[in-house]
Length: 607
Ligand SMILES: Nc1ncnc2c1ncn2[C@@H]1O[C@H](COP(=O)(O)OP(=O)(O)OP(=O)(O)O)[C@@H](O)[C@H]1O
Image (cartoon, rainbow, N blue to C red; front, side, top):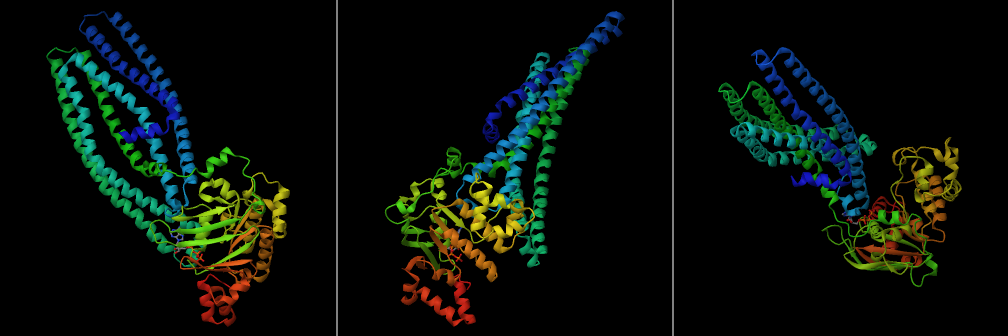
Protein backbone atom coordinates (compact mmCIF):
# COMPACT_ATOMS: atom_id res chain seq x y z
CA UNK A 1 0.00 0.00 0.00
CA UNK A 2 2.94 2.31 0.80
CA UNK A 3 4.22 1.98 -2.73
CA UNK A 4 0.83 2.99 -4.07
CA UNK A 5 0.82 6.15 -2.02
CA UNK A 6 4.38 6.76 -3.19
CA UNK A 7 3.09 6.98 -6.75
CA UNK A 8 0.48 9.50 -5.67
CA UNK A 9 2.88 11.61 -3.60
CA UNK A 10 5.40 11.55 -6.47
CA UNK A 11 2.86 13.49 -8.50
CA UNK A 12 1.61 15.70 -5.72
CA UNK A 13 1.28 18.75 -7.94
CA UNK A 14 -1.78 16.99 -9.30
CA UNK A 15 -3.39 17.26 -5.85
CA UNK A 16 -6.07 19.61 -7.17
CA UNK A 17 -7.09 17.04 -9.78
CA UNK A 18 -7.13 14.23 -7.24
CA UNK A 19 -9.35 16.27 -4.93
CA UNK A 20 -11.74 17.10 -7.80
CA UNK A 21 -11.92 13.44 -8.81
CA UNK A 22 -12.43 12.33 -5.20
CA UNK A 23 -15.18 14.94 -4.73
CA UNK A 24 -16.86 13.76 -7.93
CA UNK A 25 -16.73 10.14 -6.83
CA UNK A 26 -18.08 10.96 -3.35
CA UNK A 27 -21.00 12.85 -4.90
CA UNK A 28 -21.64 9.99 -7.31
CA UNK A 29 -21.60 7.53 -4.40
CA UNK A 30 -24.08 9.64 -2.41
CA UNK A 31 -26.37 9.86 -5.42
CA UNK A 32 -26.12 6.12 -5.97
CA UNK A 33 -26.95 5.45 -2.31
CA UNK A 34 -30.13 7.51 -2.53
CA UNK A 35 -31.57 5.28 -5.26
CA UNK A 36 -32.25 2.15 -3.09
CA UNK A 37 -34.12 4.37 -0.62
CA UNK A 38 -36.32 5.74 -3.42
CA UNK A 39 -37.03 2.28 -4.79
CA UNK A 40 -37.65 0.94 -1.25
CA UNK A 41 -40.05 3.76 -0.49
CA UNK A 42 -41.84 3.27 -3.84
CA UNK A 43 -42.18 -0.48 -3.09
CA UNK A 44 -43.81 0.27 0.27
CA UNK A 45 -46.23 2.74 -1.40
CA UNK A 46 -47.19 0.11 -4.00
CA UNK A 47 -47.64 -2.61 -1.36
CA UNK A 48 -49.81 -0.22 0.73
CA UNK A 49 -51.92 0.70 -2.33
CA UNK A 50 -52.40 -2.95 -3.29
CA UNK A 51 -53.38 -3.93 0.24
CA UNK A 52 -55.86 -1.04 0.39
CA UNK A 53 -53.99 0.82 3.14
CA UNK A 54 -53.56 3.81 0.82
CA UNK A 55 -55.78 5.39 -1.86
CA UNK A 56 -54.82 4.84 -5.47
CA UNK A 57 -54.52 8.54 -6.34
CA UNK A 58 -52.31 9.41 -3.34
CA UNK A 59 -50.14 6.35 -4.12
CA UNK A 60 -49.75 7.47 -7.77
CA UNK A 61 -48.80 11.01 -6.73
CA UNK A 62 -46.26 9.58 -4.26
CA UNK A 63 -44.64 7.17 -6.76
CA UNK A 64 -44.50 9.90 -9.44
CA UNK A 65 -42.70 12.19 -6.98
CA UNK A 66 -40.32 9.36 -6.18
CA UNK A 67 -39.73 8.69 -9.90
CA UNK A 68 -39.05 12.44 -10.35
CA UNK A 69 -36.52 12.31 -7.51
CA UNK A 70 -34.88 9.35 -9.24
CA UNK A 71 -34.66 11.35 -12.50
CA UNK A 72 -33.12 14.34 -10.70
CA UNK A 73 -30.53 12.10 -9.04
CA UNK A 74 -29.68 10.44 -12.36
CA UNK A 75 -29.20 13.83 -14.09
CA UNK A 76 -27.06 15.02 -11.19
CA UNK A 77 -24.88 11.91 -11.16
CA UNK A 78 -24.50 11.91 -14.98
CA UNK A 79 -23.30 15.50 -14.81
CA UNK A 80 -20.88 14.79 -11.99
CA UNK A 81 -19.42 11.70 -13.63
CA UNK A 82 -18.96 13.59 -16.92
CA UNK A 83 -16.98 16.27 -15.05
CA UNK A 84 -15.09 13.57 -13.14
CA UNK A 85 -14.23 11.79 -16.40
CA UNK A 86 -12.97 15.02 -17.96
CA UNK A 87 -10.81 15.84 -14.93
CA UNK A 88 -9.52 12.27 -14.98
CA UNK A 89 -8.42 12.55 -18.62
CA UNK A 90 -6.60 15.84 -18.05
CA UNK A 91 -5.05 14.42 -14.90
CA UNK A 92 -3.64 11.39 -16.73
CA UNK A 93 -2.23 13.56 -19.54
CA UNK A 94 -0.52 15.72 -16.93
CA UNK A 95 0.69 12.70 -15.03
CA UNK A 96 2.16 11.24 -18.21
CA UNK A 97 4.00 14.51 -18.82
CA UNK A 98 5.34 14.68 -15.27
CA UNK A 99 6.53 11.08 -15.24
CA UNK A 100 8.14 11.25 -18.70
CA UNK A 101 9.91 14.57 -18.25
CA UNK A 102 11.19 13.68 -14.78
CA UNK A 103 12.55 10.40 -16.07
CA UNK A 104 14.23 12.11 -19.01
CA UNK A 105 15.66 14.81 -16.75
CA UNK A 106 17.00 12.16 -14.41
CA UNK A 107 18.53 10.18 -17.27
CA UNK A 108 20.16 13.29 -18.71
CA UNK A 109 21.67 13.94 -15.29
CA UNK A 110 23.00 10.45 -14.61
CA UNK A 111 26.72 9.76 -14.90
CA UNK A 112 28.16 7.94 -17.90
CA UNK A 113 28.66 4.77 -15.84
CA UNK A 114 24.88 4.29 -15.71
CA UNK A 115 24.63 4.23 -19.50
CA UNK A 116 27.60 1.87 -19.78
CA UNK A 117 25.44 -0.78 -18.15
CA UNK A 118 22.04 -0.16 -19.76
CA UNK A 119 20.55 -0.70 -23.20
CA UNK A 120 18.72 2.22 -24.80
CA UNK A 121 15.66 0.12 -25.62
CA UNK A 122 15.45 -1.13 -22.04
CA UNK A 123 15.38 2.43 -20.77
CA UNK A 124 12.61 3.31 -23.23
CA UNK A 125 10.60 0.16 -22.54
CA UNK A 126 10.78 0.81 -18.81
CA UNK A 127 9.56 4.35 -19.28
CA UNK A 128 6.58 3.32 -21.40
CA UNK A 129 5.49 0.55 -19.10
CA UNK A 130 5.81 2.56 -15.91
CA UNK A 131 3.85 5.42 -17.32
CA UNK A 132 1.00 3.31 -18.64
CA UNK A 133 0.69 1.29 -15.46
CA UNK A 134 1.04 4.21 -13.07
CA UNK A 135 -1.41 6.38 -15.01
CA UNK A 136 -3.96 3.57 -15.22
CA UNK A 137 -3.65 2.95 -11.53
CA UNK A 138 -3.95 6.60 -10.56
CA UNK A 139 -7.09 6.86 -12.65
CA UNK A 140 -8.61 3.69 -11.22
CA UNK A 141 -7.61 4.65 -7.72
CA UNK A 142 -8.95 8.16 -7.77
CA UNK A 143 -12.11 7.14 -9.65
CA UNK A 144 -13.05 4.09 -7.63
CA UNK A 145 -11.38 4.06 -4.25
CA UNK A 146 -13.41 6.79 -2.60
CA UNK A 147 -16.69 5.71 -4.16
CA UNK A 148 -15.92 2.29 -2.78
CA UNK A 149 -15.08 3.61 0.67
CA UNK A 150 -18.19 5.80 0.86
CA UNK A 151 -20.51 3.08 -0.37
CA UNK A 152 -19.07 0.52 2.00
CA UNK A 153 -19.33 2.71 5.09
CA UNK A 154 -22.86 3.82 4.21
CA UNK A 155 -24.04 0.28 3.48
CA UNK A 156 -22.56 -0.93 6.78
CA UNK A 157 -24.24 1.82 8.82
CA UNK A 158 -27.62 1.28 7.14
CA UNK A 159 -27.37 -2.50 7.47
CA UNK A 160 -26.46 -2.17 11.19
CA UNK A 161 -29.55 0.02 11.65
CA UNK A 162 -31.76 -2.74 10.27
CA UNK A 163 -30.04 -5.87 11.65
CA UNK A 164 -26.58 -6.16 13.25
CA UNK A 165 -25.85 -9.74 12.01
CA UNK A 166 -26.22 -8.37 8.50
CA UNK A 167 -23.67 -5.61 9.17
CA UNK A 168 -21.30 -8.08 10.78
CA UNK A 169 -21.33 -10.31 7.72
CA UNK A 170 -20.77 -7.35 5.44
CA UNK A 171 -17.95 -6.13 7.67
CA UNK A 172 -15.94 -9.34 7.53
CA UNK A 173 -15.97 -9.39 3.71
CA UNK A 174 -13.27 -6.76 3.38
CA UNK A 175 -10.56 -8.05 5.73
CA UNK A 176 -11.06 -11.56 4.37
CA UNK A 177 -10.81 -10.31 0.81
CA UNK A 178 -7.70 -8.23 1.49
CA UNK A 179 -6.05 -11.09 3.35
CA UNK A 180 -6.70 -13.51 0.48
CA UNK A 181 -5.37 -10.93 -1.99
CA UNK A 182 -2.21 -10.34 0.03
CA UNK A 183 -1.58 -14.09 -0.03
CA UNK A 184 -1.60 -13.98 -3.84
CA UNK A 185 0.14 -10.70 -4.34
CA UNK A 186 3.77 -11.50 -3.50
CA UNK A 187 3.93 -14.37 -5.95
CA UNK A 188 2.10 -12.32 -8.60
CA UNK A 189 4.69 -9.55 -8.21
CA UNK A 190 7.55 -12.02 -8.62
CA UNK A 191 6.07 -13.29 -11.88
CA UNK A 192 5.49 -9.75 -13.06
CA UNK A 193 9.13 -8.79 -12.39
CA UNK A 194 10.32 -11.78 -14.44
CA UNK A 195 7.98 -10.80 -17.27
CA UNK A 196 9.13 -7.17 -17.19
CA UNK A 197 12.74 -8.26 -17.32
CA UNK A 198 12.01 -10.31 -20.46
CA UNK A 199 10.08 -7.51 -22.14
CA UNK A 200 12.75 -4.92 -21.29
CA UNK A 201 15.60 -7.09 -22.49
CA UNK A 202 13.78 -7.86 -25.74
CA UNK A 203 13.01 -4.15 -26.12
CA UNK A 204 16.65 -3.24 -25.53
CA UNK A 205 17.86 -5.61 -28.22
CA UNK A 206 15.07 -4.55 -30.58
CA UNK A 207 16.18 -0.90 -30.46
CA UNK A 208 19.82 -1.87 -30.87
CA UNK A 209 19.08 -4.08 -33.86
CA UNK A 210 16.94 -1.52 -35.65
CA UNK A 211 19.61 1.12 -34.96
CA UNK A 212 22.29 -1.09 -36.51
CA UNK A 213 20.16 -2.79 -39.10
CA UNK A 214 22.95 -2.61 -41.71
CA UNK A 215 25.23 -4.71 -39.52
CA UNK A 216 22.46 -7.24 -38.94
CA UNK A 217 21.77 -7.46 -42.67
CA UNK A 218 25.42 -7.76 -43.59
CA UNK A 219 25.85 -10.69 -41.18
CA UNK A 220 22.55 -12.16 -42.41
CA UNK A 221 21.60 -12.37 -38.75
CA UNK A 222 17.91 -11.50 -39.10
CA UNK A 223 16.69 -14.95 -38.15
CA UNK A 224 19.02 -15.14 -35.16
CA UNK A 225 17.81 -11.79 -33.86
CA UNK A 226 14.18 -12.69 -34.44
CA UNK A 227 14.65 -15.99 -32.60
CA UNK A 228 16.21 -14.32 -29.55
CA UNK A 229 13.40 -11.76 -29.53
CA UNK A 230 10.69 -14.39 -29.94
CA UNK A 231 12.20 -16.52 -27.19
CA UNK A 232 11.98 -13.62 -24.76
CA UNK A 233 8.35 -13.02 -25.61
CA UNK A 234 7.58 -16.73 -25.44
CA UNK A 235 9.04 -16.68 -21.93
CA UNK A 236 6.46 -14.06 -21.06
CA UNK A 237 3.69 -16.39 -22.24
CA UNK A 238 5.01 -19.10 -19.93
CA UNK A 239 5.32 -16.69 -17.03
CA UNK A 240 1.85 -15.29 -17.70
CA UNK A 241 0.40 -18.79 -17.79
CA UNK A 242 1.70 -19.59 -14.30
CA UNK A 243 0.95 -16.10 -13.04
CA UNK A 244 -2.59 -16.10 -14.36
CA UNK A 245 -3.34 -19.64 -13.17
CA UNK A 246 -2.18 -18.66 -9.72
CA UNK A 247 -4.07 -15.37 -9.70
CA UNK A 248 -7.34 -16.70 -11.06
CA UNK A 249 -7.15 -19.84 -8.91
CA UNK A 250 -6.91 -17.62 -5.86
CA UNK A 251 -9.57 -15.36 -7.31
CA UNK A 252 -11.94 -18.31 -7.56
CA UNK A 253 -11.29 -19.10 -3.88
CA UNK A 254 -11.86 -15.44 -3.02
CA UNK A 255 -15.10 -15.36 -4.92
CA UNK A 256 -16.20 -18.66 -3.38
CA UNK A 257 -15.68 -17.26 0.11
CA UNK A 258 -17.54 -14.09 -0.91
CA UNK A 259 -20.42 -16.17 -2.30
CA UNK A 260 -20.73 -17.99 1.05
CA UNK A 261 -20.87 -14.71 2.93
CA UNK A 262 -23.44 -13.29 0.54
CA UNK A 263 -25.47 -16.48 0.95
CA UNK A 264 -25.63 -15.71 4.70
CA UNK A 265 -26.57 -12.09 4.02
CA UNK A 266 -29.45 -12.92 1.66
CA UNK A 267 -30.65 -15.68 3.98
CA UNK A 268 -30.91 -13.11 6.80
CA UNK A 269 -32.73 -10.53 4.65
CA UNK A 270 -35.30 -12.98 3.29
CA UNK A 271 -36.00 -14.81 6.56
CA UNK A 272 -36.35 -11.51 8.45
CA UNK A 273 -38.85 -10.30 5.82
CA UNK A 274 -40.86 -13.54 5.94
CA UNK A 275 -40.98 -13.25 9.72
CA UNK A 276 -42.24 -9.67 9.33
CA UNK A 277 -39.16 -8.00 10.84
CA UNK A 278 -38.64 -6.12 7.54
CA UNK A 279 -41.32 -4.64 5.26
CA UNK A 280 -41.18 -5.57 1.56
CA UNK A 281 -39.80 -2.05 0.97
CA UNK A 282 -37.05 -2.66 3.56
CA UNK A 283 -36.20 -5.93 1.82
CA UNK A 284 -35.96 -4.24 -1.60
CA UNK A 285 -33.81 -1.49 -0.09
CA UNK A 286 -31.47 -3.98 1.62
CA UNK A 287 -31.20 -6.23 -1.45
CA UNK A 288 -30.09 -3.21 -3.47
CA UNK A 289 -27.66 -2.05 -0.79
CA UNK A 290 -26.09 -5.50 -0.63
CA UNK A 291 -25.79 -5.46 -4.43
CA UNK A 292 -24.01 -2.14 -4.03
CA UNK A 293 -21.68 -3.65 -1.45
CA UNK A 294 -20.74 -6.35 -3.92
CA UNK A 295 -19.61 -3.73 -6.38
CA UNK A 296 -16.75 -2.42 -4.18
CA UNK A 297 -15.53 -5.97 -3.85
CA UNK A 298 -15.23 -6.24 -7.64
CA UNK A 299 -13.73 -2.76 -7.78
CA UNK A 300 -11.28 -3.71 -5.09
CA UNK A 301 -10.17 -6.54 -7.32
CA UNK A 302 -9.55 -4.08 -10.13
CA UNK A 303 -7.75 -1.57 -7.92
CA UNK A 304 -5.56 -4.23 -6.36
CA UNK A 305 -4.82 -5.60 -9.83
CA UNK A 306 -3.89 -2.25 -11.37
CA UNK A 307 -2.08 -1.27 -8.17
CA UNK A 308 0.03 -4.41 -8.41
CA UNK A 309 0.83 -3.68 -12.01
CA UNK A 310 1.72 -0.11 -11.13
CA UNK A 311 4.04 -1.23 -8.34
CA UNK A 312 5.71 -3.87 -10.49
CA UNK A 313 5.82 -1.62 -13.53
CA UNK A 314 7.18 1.35 -11.73
CA UNK A 315 9.71 -0.39 -9.52
CA UNK A 316 12.53 0.04 -12.06
CA UNK A 317 11.33 3.56 -12.78
CA UNK A 318 11.52 4.54 -9.13
CA UNK A 319 14.86 2.74 -8.79
CA UNK A 320 16.23 5.02 -11.49
CA UNK A 321 14.62 8.06 -9.87
CA UNK A 322 16.24 7.10 -6.56
CA UNK A 323 19.81 7.02 -7.92
CA UNK A 324 21.74 9.70 -6.12
CA UNK A 325 23.85 12.05 -8.16
CA UNK A 326 26.94 13.33 -6.44
CA UNK A 327 27.87 16.18 -8.70
CA UNK A 328 25.39 18.82 -9.76
CA UNK A 329 24.17 17.75 -13.20
CA UNK A 330 25.22 19.97 -16.10
CA UNK A 331 21.51 20.29 -16.93
CA UNK A 332 20.75 22.26 -13.75
CA UNK A 333 23.62 24.66 -14.34
CA UNK A 334 22.60 25.12 -17.96
CA UNK A 335 19.21 26.30 -16.77
CA UNK A 336 20.88 28.68 -14.33
CA UNK A 337 23.34 30.09 -16.86
CA UNK A 338 21.45 30.31 -20.13
CA UNK A 339 24.20 32.48 -21.64
CA UNK A 340 26.70 29.62 -21.29
CA UNK A 341 30.31 30.05 -20.22
CA UNK A 342 33.06 32.18 -21.70
CA UNK A 343 35.85 30.38 -23.48
CA UNK A 344 39.07 30.36 -21.44
CA UNK A 345 42.15 31.88 -23.02
CA UNK A 346 44.71 29.29 -21.98
CA UNK A 347 47.61 31.45 -23.16
CA UNK A 348 46.97 33.99 -20.41
CA UNK A 349 47.24 31.31 -17.75
CA UNK A 350 50.47 30.57 -15.90
CA UNK A 351 51.57 26.97 -16.26
CA UNK A 352 50.30 24.22 -18.53
CA UNK A 353 46.88 24.19 -20.18
CA UNK A 354 46.10 20.81 -18.67
CA UNK A 355 47.82 18.25 -16.48
CA UNK A 356 47.30 14.65 -15.46
CA UNK A 357 49.00 14.04 -12.13
CA UNK A 358 49.40 10.44 -10.98
CA UNK A 359 45.99 9.52 -12.38
CA UNK A 360 44.80 6.02 -11.53
CA UNK A 361 41.47 4.77 -12.78
CA UNK A 362 39.48 1.62 -13.56
CA UNK A 363 35.87 1.02 -14.60
CA UNK A 364 33.42 -0.25 -11.96
CA UNK A 365 35.12 -2.95 -9.89
CA UNK A 366 37.53 -3.81 -12.71
CA UNK A 367 41.30 -3.60 -12.55
CA UNK A 368 43.07 -0.29 -13.10
CA UNK A 369 43.08 0.79 -16.75
CA UNK A 370 45.39 3.71 -16.01
CA UNK A 371 48.00 3.63 -13.30
CA UNK A 372 49.82 6.73 -12.08
CA UNK A 373 49.56 8.55 -15.40
CA UNK A 374 51.33 11.90 -15.36
CA UNK A 375 51.83 14.39 -18.19
CA UNK A 376 51.05 17.98 -19.02
CA UNK A 377 50.06 19.81 -22.19
CA UNK A 378 50.96 23.45 -22.83
CA UNK A 379 48.63 26.02 -24.33
CA UNK A 380 48.51 25.74 -28.11
CA UNK A 381 50.35 22.43 -28.11
CA UNK A 382 49.33 19.39 -30.16
CA UNK A 383 49.84 16.13 -28.33
CA UNK A 384 49.20 12.66 -29.72
CA UNK A 385 48.52 9.58 -27.61
CA UNK A 386 49.87 6.27 -28.79
CA UNK A 387 49.31 2.91 -27.15
CA UNK A 388 47.93 -0.54 -27.76
CA UNK A 389 44.28 -0.88 -28.54
CA UNK A 390 42.47 -1.04 -25.20
CA UNK A 391 45.45 0.69 -23.62
CA UNK A 392 43.37 3.52 -22.16
CA UNK A 393 43.61 6.38 -24.70
CA UNK A 394 39.85 6.94 -24.86
CA UNK A 395 39.69 6.49 -21.11
CA UNK A 396 42.08 9.46 -20.71
CA UNK A 397 39.65 11.59 -22.68
CA UNK A 398 36.66 10.31 -20.70
CA UNK A 399 38.42 11.35 -17.51
CA UNK A 400 39.34 14.76 -18.90
CA UNK A 401 35.65 15.29 -19.68
CA UNK A 402 34.73 14.39 -16.10
CA UNK A 403 32.72 11.33 -17.17
CA UNK A 404 34.03 9.17 -14.30
CA UNK A 405 35.62 9.72 -10.88
CA UNK A 406 39.33 9.03 -10.52
CA UNK A 407 40.59 6.34 -8.17
CA UNK A 408 43.62 8.47 -7.36
CA UNK A 409 45.52 11.52 -8.62
CA UNK A 410 44.17 14.68 -10.18
CA UNK A 411 43.51 16.36 -13.51
CA UNK A 412 43.74 20.12 -13.94
CA UNK A 413 42.51 22.36 -16.72
CA UNK A 414 43.84 25.91 -16.78
CA UNK A 415 45.35 25.30 -13.33
CA UNK A 416 42.05 24.23 -11.77
CA UNK A 417 41.33 20.78 -10.45
CA UNK A 418 38.68 19.26 -12.69
CA UNK A 419 36.89 17.71 -9.71
CA UNK A 420 36.21 21.19 -8.34
CA UNK A 421 34.89 22.52 -11.65
CA UNK A 422 31.23 22.21 -12.55
CA UNK A 423 30.51 19.92 -15.49
CA UNK A 424 29.24 22.88 -17.51
CA UNK A 425 32.40 24.88 -16.81
CA UNK A 426 34.64 21.97 -17.73
CA UNK A 427 32.83 20.67 -20.79
CA UNK A 428 32.30 24.14 -22.22
CA UNK A 429 36.09 24.37 -22.63
CA UNK A 430 36.53 21.05 -24.40
CA UNK A 431 35.47 20.20 -27.92
CA UNK A 432 35.42 16.57 -29.00
CA UNK A 433 35.40 15.17 -32.49
CA UNK A 434 34.39 11.58 -31.90
CA UNK A 435 35.74 8.68 -33.85
CA UNK A 436 32.27 7.36 -34.59
CA UNK A 437 29.81 9.45 -36.48
CA UNK A 438 27.94 11.28 -33.78
CA UNK A 439 25.30 13.22 -35.65
CA UNK A 440 21.58 13.42 -34.98
CA UNK A 441 18.64 13.09 -37.30
CA UNK A 442 17.46 16.47 -38.54
CA UNK A 443 19.02 19.03 -40.82
CA UNK A 444 22.65 19.97 -41.42
CA UNK A 445 21.92 23.37 -39.84
CA UNK A 446 20.65 21.69 -36.67
CA UNK A 447 23.65 19.41 -36.54
CA UNK A 448 26.30 22.08 -36.90
CA UNK A 449 24.25 24.44 -34.73
CA UNK A 450 24.15 21.81 -31.98
CA UNK A 451 27.31 23.46 -30.66
CA UNK A 452 25.62 26.81 -30.23
CA UNK A 453 21.87 27.22 -30.26
CA UNK A 454 22.10 30.95 -30.93
CA UNK A 455 24.45 30.66 -33.94
CA UNK A 456 23.37 32.63 -37.01
CA UNK A 457 23.36 31.13 -40.51
CA UNK A 458 26.47 33.17 -41.28
CA UNK A 459 28.32 31.62 -38.34
CA UNK A 460 27.17 28.13 -39.31
CA UNK A 461 28.27 28.67 -42.91
CA UNK A 462 31.64 30.07 -41.78
CA UNK A 463 32.18 26.96 -39.61
CA UNK A 464 31.15 24.71 -42.51
CA UNK A 465 33.60 26.53 -44.81
CA UNK A 466 36.48 26.11 -42.37
CA UNK A 467 35.62 22.42 -42.01
CA UNK A 468 35.66 22.01 -45.79
CA UNK A 469 31.99 21.02 -45.66
CA UNK A 470 30.41 24.02 -47.33
CA UNK A 471 31.12 22.87 -50.88
CA UNK A 472 29.14 19.66 -50.57
CA UNK A 473 26.40 21.25 -48.44
CA UNK A 474 25.87 23.87 -51.14
CA UNK A 475 25.44 21.18 -53.74
CA UNK A 476 22.47 19.64 -51.86
CA UNK A 477 19.23 21.08 -53.17
CA UNK A 478 18.12 21.95 -49.64
CA UNK A 479 21.53 23.25 -48.52
CA UNK A 480 21.68 23.69 -44.76
CA UNK A 481 18.10 22.43 -44.56
CA UNK A 482 18.99 19.02 -45.96
CA UNK A 483 17.76 16.24 -43.72
CA UNK A 484 20.55 13.76 -43.00
CA UNK A 485 18.68 10.74 -41.57
CA UNK A 486 19.25 8.94 -38.32
CA UNK A 487 22.83 9.49 -37.12
CA UNK A 488 23.62 11.06 -40.49
CA UNK A 489 22.74 7.91 -42.44
CA UNK A 490 22.33 9.80 -45.71
CA UNK A 491 25.84 11.28 -45.68
CA UNK A 492 29.10 9.65 -46.69
CA UNK A 493 31.71 8.89 -44.03
CA UNK A 494 33.84 11.88 -45.01
CA UNK A 495 30.84 14.21 -45.14
CA UNK A 496 29.73 13.12 -41.68
CA UNK A 497 33.19 13.79 -40.32
CA UNK A 498 33.33 17.23 -41.88
CA UNK A 499 29.94 18.10 -40.36
CA UNK A 500 31.20 17.04 -36.95
CA UNK A 501 34.37 19.07 -37.48
CA UNK A 502 32.21 22.09 -38.40
CA UNK A 503 30.21 21.52 -35.23
CA UNK A 504 33.41 21.53 -33.15
CA UNK A 505 34.61 24.69 -34.93
CA UNK A 506 31.35 26.42 -34.05
CA UNK A 507 31.80 25.42 -30.40
CA UNK A 508 35.19 27.14 -30.49
CA UNK A 509 36.58 25.29 -27.46
CA UNK A 510 39.86 26.10 -25.70
CA UNK A 511 40.88 22.45 -25.73
CA UNK A 512 40.24 20.11 -28.58
CA UNK A 513 40.05 16.35 -28.39
CA UNK A 514 40.33 14.52 -31.62
CA UNK A 515 39.61 10.82 -31.86
CA UNK A 516 40.75 10.31 -35.42
CA UNK A 517 38.40 8.21 -37.49
CA UNK A 518 39.72 4.73 -38.23
CA UNK A 519 37.41 4.14 -41.15
CA UNK A 520 39.54 4.54 -44.24
CA UNK A 521 38.37 7.39 -46.42
CA UNK A 522 39.55 7.72 -49.99
CA UNK A 523 42.54 10.00 -50.37
CA UNK A 524 40.61 12.99 -51.63
CA UNK A 525 38.01 12.72 -48.92
CA UNK A 526 40.71 12.24 -46.31
CA UNK A 527 42.55 15.33 -47.56
CA UNK A 528 39.36 17.35 -47.22
CA UNK A 529 38.70 16.07 -43.69
CA UNK A 530 42.33 16.62 -42.75
CA UNK A 531 42.24 20.21 -44.01
CA UNK A 532 39.09 20.78 -41.93
CA UNK A 533 40.79 19.35 -38.88
CA UNK A 534 43.84 21.55 -39.46
CA UNK A 535 41.73 24.68 -39.33
CA UNK A 536 39.98 23.32 -36.26
CA UNK A 537 43.28 22.71 -34.45
CA UNK A 538 44.69 26.12 -35.35
CA UNK A 539 45.51 28.12 -32.22
CA UNK A 540 44.04 25.45 -30.01
CA UNK A 541 45.41 23.04 -27.44
CA UNK A 542 44.78 19.68 -29.06
CA UNK A 543 44.83 16.10 -27.80
CA UNK A 544 44.81 13.57 -30.60
CA UNK A 545 44.17 9.86 -30.58
CA UNK A 546 45.73 9.24 -33.94
CA UNK A 547 45.17 6.29 -36.22
CA UNK A 548 47.67 7.40 -38.88
CA UNK A 549 51.41 7.72 -38.43
CA UNK A 550 51.30 10.70 -40.77
CA UNK A 551 49.12 12.54 -38.26
CA UNK A 552 51.32 11.58 -35.33
CA UNK A 553 54.46 12.78 -37.08
CA UNK A 554 53.11 16.35 -37.32
CA UNK A 555 52.25 16.87 -33.62
CA UNK A 556 54.41 18.76 -31.11
CA UNK A 557 54.74 15.89 -28.66
CA UNK A 558 53.77 12.26 -28.32
CA UNK A 559 52.74 10.47 -25.14
CA UNK A 560 53.06 6.70 -25.37
CA UNK A 561 51.14 4.43 -23.01
CA UNK A 562 52.12 0.94 -21.95
CA UNK A 563 50.34 -1.27 -19.39
CA UNK A 564 48.29 1.66 -18.18
CA UNK A 565 51.36 3.82 -17.55
CA UNK A 566 53.10 6.58 -19.49
CA UNK A 567 56.04 4.99 -21.27
CA UNK A 568 57.65 7.93 -23.05
CA UNK A 569 56.95 11.59 -23.73
CA UNK A 570 58.80 13.52 -26.43
CA UNK A 571 58.74 15.18 -29.83
CA UNK A 572 58.23 12.87 -32.83
CA UNK A 573 61.90 13.38 -33.73
CA UNK A 574 63.04 12.42 -30.22
CA UNK A 575 60.82 9.37 -29.96
CA UNK A 576 61.74 8.23 -33.47
CA UNK A 577 65.26 7.72 -32.09
CA UNK A 578 64.48 6.39 -28.63
CA UNK A 579 63.73 2.82 -29.65
CA UNK A 580 60.35 2.95 -27.85
CA UNK A 581 56.83 2.29 -29.13
CA UNK A 582 56.79 5.12 -31.69
CA UNK A 583 60.17 4.11 -33.13
CA UNK A 584 58.91 0.54 -33.45
CA UNK A 585 55.77 1.72 -35.20
CA UNK A 586 57.84 3.69 -37.71
CA UNK A 587 59.94 0.64 -38.36
CA UNK A 588 56.90 -1.57 -38.82
CA UNK A 589 55.55 0.90 -41.34
CA UNK A 590 58.78 0.81 -43.23
CA UNK A 591 58.70 -2.98 -43.34
CA UNK A 592 55.22 -2.82 -44.88
CA UNK A 593 54.75 -6.58 -44.63
CA UNK A 594 51.43 -8.20 -43.71
CA UNK A 595 52.74 -9.14 -40.27
CA UNK A 596 53.98 -5.59 -39.73
CA UNK A 597 50.61 -4.14 -40.71
CA UNK A 598 48.91 -6.51 -38.29
CA UNK A 599 51.14 -5.31 -35.46
CA UNK A 600 50.45 -1.69 -36.40
CA UNK A 601 46.75 -2.37 -36.11
CA UNK A 602 47.23 -3.54 -32.53
CA UNK A 603 48.20 0.08 -31.88
CA UNK A 604 45.11 1.30 -33.71
CA UNK A 605 47.30 2.52 -36.57
CA UNK A 606 45.53 2.07 -39.86
CA UNK A 607 48.14 3.61 -42.14
N1 LIG B 1 32.67 1.86 -20.20
C1 LIG B 1 33.56 0.91 -19.90
N2 LIG B 1 33.29 0.04 -18.92
C2 LIG B 1 34.18 -0.91 -18.59
N3 LIG B 1 35.37 -1.06 -19.20
C3 LIG B 1 35.70 -0.22 -20.18
C4 LIG B 1 34.80 0.83 -20.59
N4 LIG B 1 35.38 1.52 -21.60
C5 LIG B 1 36.59 0.94 -21.80
N5 LIG B 1 36.78 -0.08 -20.96
C6 LIG B 1 37.99 -0.89 -20.84
O1 LIG B 1 39.06 -0.04 -20.53
C7 LIG B 1 40.22 -0.39 -21.26
C8 LIG B 1 40.73 0.84 -22.03
O2 LIG B 1 39.80 1.17 -23.04
P1 LIG B 1 39.97 2.45 -23.96
O3 LIG B 1 38.74 2.59 -24.75
O4 LIG B 1 40.38 3.60 -23.13
O5 LIG B 1 41.18 2.01 -24.87
P2 LIG B 1 41.83 2.73 -26.15
O6 LIG B 1 43.28 2.83 -25.86
O7 LIG B 1 41.11 3.99 -26.44
O8 LIG B 1 41.55 1.65 -27.23
P3 LIG B 1 41.31 1.83 -28.84
O9 LIG B 1 42.55 2.36 -29.42
O10 LIG B 1 41.07 0.42 -29.25
O11 LIG B 1 40.12 2.70 -29.00
C9 LIG B 1 39.84 -1.55 -22.15
O12 LIG B 1 40.31 -2.71 -21.52
C10 LIG B 1 38.32 -1.56 -22.17
O13 LIG B 1 37.84 -2.86 -22.21
